[in-house]
Structure formats: C-alpha cells, structure tokens
Length: 267
Image (cartoon, rainbow, N blue to C red; front, top):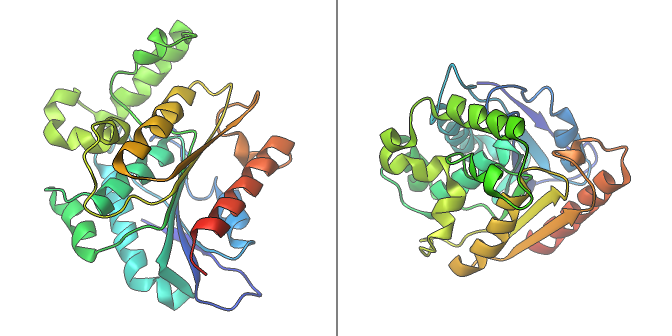
C-alpha cells in the first residue's frame, strides 16, 4: 500500500493530478517497474500518484480494485499537499491497469452498493480524463479471443484465460453483480446513462496487440452513454508499446496523450 509522487520541479501549482495504475496481468509488476509513466506525465506539468495494489492470485478480485479505490480517496484528501488539483483529475493505466482505472471510473460515475465502492461515490470524485491504454477491459470469457478475427493462437488464449482465472479466483457467476466491476467494458456496453458525466477518454493500442478488440469495443460503446472518446491505433505496435519510449510510435503515443490532456483539462 505504497505510492510514489512525481512532481514537476519548475511549475507552480496547483497542477492536474494523475492517478496511474500499472499493468501486469493483475499479478506481476509494480509502481517501481512503471517509473517511466510517472516521469513522462510529470515532465509536462502533472502531479502523478503512481500506486501499488494487491496482486492476484494471492489476492483475487476485488482486492486490486479496492486498493485503487482506497488510493483514489487518499489522493482526494491529500492531493493539495503535493500541489495537485483533484478537480483536474486524470485516471490512467495500461493493460490490467486500464481495466482497473475504467472500473474506478464506474465507481465515480455510477452509484454502487459495495461498501468500498460507496466510499468513492460518497466522496464525490469525478475524473476529468480517462486514459486506458491497451486494456483487458473484460476479464470473463477469455475464450472470445479465440473466436475473434483473426483468432489468437490456442496457447495465447490459454494464457489470457489463466490471467482471468487468477484475477477472479472463482467462477464469474459467484461474484454476482460485482462482476460489473471486473468487466467494465460489458457494463458500459449495456448503455445505462451515468449519474455523473463520464470523462473524455483516450484509448490507445497497437495494431499487433492481442487485446485490440477490447479497445475497439470501448470506442463503439462510450458514445452511447454520452461520452467523448478518441481511440488511437498504432500500426504494427505490440502490447504496452508506449512504455518503450525510444520507439517513434511510443513517442507519438505520448504526444497524442499530451495533446488530449491539453484539450480536455481546464487550465
């Protein structure tokens, strides 16, 4: 339950706040492997809160999302001490982290019954921007990747199914309505209007990413709930390519991100 705070050295606050949630299939990596994300966003004028969360399979769903919710409430209470403006809040994450920040946005925009979800709702936090990179936005039915066109190889489908099983810990039916938060994409696709406005969303993914279908579905689903969405597809790029900042397409992805933030965060 640690986080790192990245602050610009030569900028006067208050500055926009970013909560960054790392990926890793819900079961590996940490804030320490994702230092480049904090650096990239803070160098252009944001205060970045880069968090850890409990990992599966030792801590299955909803442990990771509960920790993200706790971190968000902590940020709301303490952001000003670090020169950050929670009124200009960005939620960002890649892969599994994209799932978690999309689910976290659900907690902000839809009233839920889970006690830990209520704490977010009651705090009244409303993000201004959502950045889900290359997300696994539906954990259930990993076999859908084998039915896609083109279908993924059997070993990769098996790997994604193992990631899903490790995260959920038990069959989806046993999670009841809380599966809405493990499958935020499916929840959005229902089209129920949010009680609070869904934030403008930039979804970035490489065209060689096996999870690209979830980004395409998100791009199609968000306008139906009144949200602004831009999806960016980077030719030939693999999963989480934007972490490799020496690559031109990665640098373009960051330029696109900065431009989106400039357009949608109030000054």
